[in-house]
Image 1 (cartoon, rainbow, N blue to C red):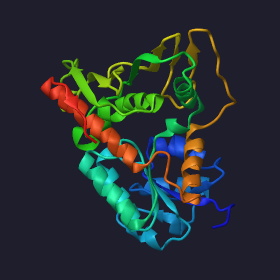
Image 2 (tube, rainbow, N blue to C red; image 1 turned 180 degrees about the vertical axis):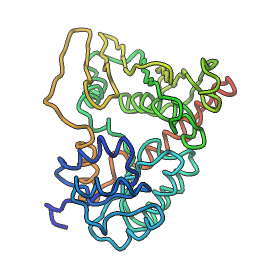
Image 3 (cartoon, helix red, strand yellow; image 1 turned 135 degrees about the vertical axis):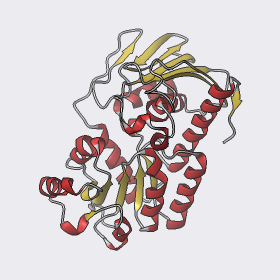
Length: 335
């Protein structure tokens, strides 16, 4: 494979994230480019064809998606669909002989994750999860602070990510989303605890609260707090909600503290520390760094830094948190 090859990416689903983030990023990437799209909305096709110069034979719908197997210009399919479709289209992508990036959460259950990983192994293709913050310099700096013990041993972690979706959004429907804010944005909190500490939790406890709008939150939690017990005794406090706007991770250590606030947005992230350290870099796109990072792992025949096994781990944690919430018990996690 030539070192200058750029991988063709097909976006599967042309909703907000594809339209306003991924497509623009693929105009800037060095190792991949937007080669095709898969959509169930015919009215979107002319706009995408013209704006991104996509050939007619690189445009698919959900019925003929499997025909992508015969298209050599498409190397990677990026599944950007509602959560309940992640497993099915990821598996179909592997059956079509393509590498797959799947948006988070990876699936609705650990069993679905297992099926996706098995399909990846059978096809001998790369499976990545759309964990963009693993490529974000600000989150990576938080990892460095912790790993190098810049402020000593970590004593506590407090993190939250909350947004306010509107009525009618698919993320409020359990059939589509698989759960509430824990599946959608709370996953960023548990991810942050894992990548900052470099550890996986051994047990969780959780608490839910009565919904402020029983119609809006009839099937899902509105707010949930949970505690992740890490190896060595550290306990991380986490919170997610669909009724407020916030997103941060704050770490208290032996000799000071450091935080990222905002922590999980596409831009505007800011690191604060007890001694007033600043961290600023030139403008960048998280999605460009993510897409290029994943494309490089494919090019170099390496495992992705955000592999399907990571997505499966997170579903194990999420399932344990929901069980703890429902039973009001401490739930140990066996991976």
